[in-house]
Length: 451
Image (cartoon, rainbow, N blue to C red; front, side):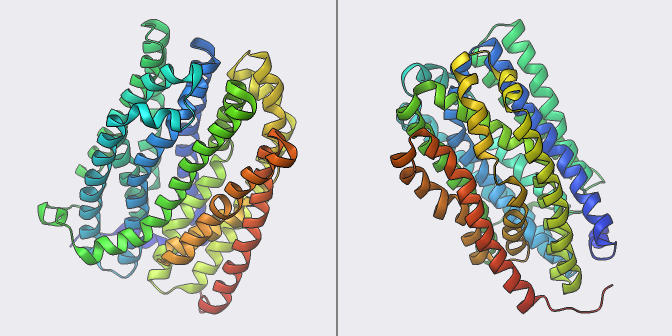
């Protein structure tokens, strides 16, 4: 029988455990976000501001395909955490094997489709005018590596489900550093322009995959799968799909949002507004890294203890995670309210972009202090295997509120209305999530003895 050290998730103090899980996750997300941030700074200063907009246009397609891996990873890892909590080790192994098979099947198929219809997809996602050619160059090369990225995102969530957050952190750190070094080599030294930026990104995916492959082959992993585990099992596929669909829907909505925002902002303000959105989008990925780290650390703890029927520990995990995340989100909010122009100048010296971006950034991050409830609340339902409420809460912010608002508000406030949609949708979705989370805790997580 495989030795399972993940039992620590059900025994150690919640605060201490959350820090142990969240800090490596946060560092990993920080490094990955810094990679994206610095990559954008390099591109903006070495190639031009239009190149920033071009990369932003490509993100929805590549992000959605890679998100298939994340969805399969998060959905399966929720099952793995609960299976380990219930000492059902064979199920955990079977789930992992099915995750690998599903990730390869879906992502390779979508990548081929994306390459065939590149000329149609790029303009549809906002790659118009001067943006089209650099976007097409970047898109074609990056899509070659997206299935590899999907395997990395899937594997990373499984590493966390095993209770090995440090290795999950390393999996994000090594390729991030590699990408920056490759950026310098390909863009600055070899002068490959957009192609150099794309090959650096694709190369970083391969580095990440090699590390994750090493982890699962090494003694550090508890999930030693064999060939029979790769065969698809219908009940397991349905369970992975039901929970993974939540993550996939979230990422699909993100892709749709990019598509709509790029087109709406291009019509309202041209390339300048699309570039401003690209910079703000990078800050959304980077600045909130500690909050996302808390959310990532929360998932395996909640899932394991729910599977072990330690409901008081689940309750405590929810409240502790929200407190930590809210504090960190407030610090992020203060920083971005004070230094938006300085941040913008790191990306570009384009006067028009510098004039527009700081105001947009303040609007976008206006409701940041309250998003902890929204993120942890939706993550809880996913962690405990309740797919439908997790899906609905995941779609609440962008699907139910944000997308309608970016069509309605610009009719009254022009481009300002687009930026106003961010804090309004955050506020409304937080209220909805808080209501359902509070009801769930009262009904299904009644106090029991604390272990």
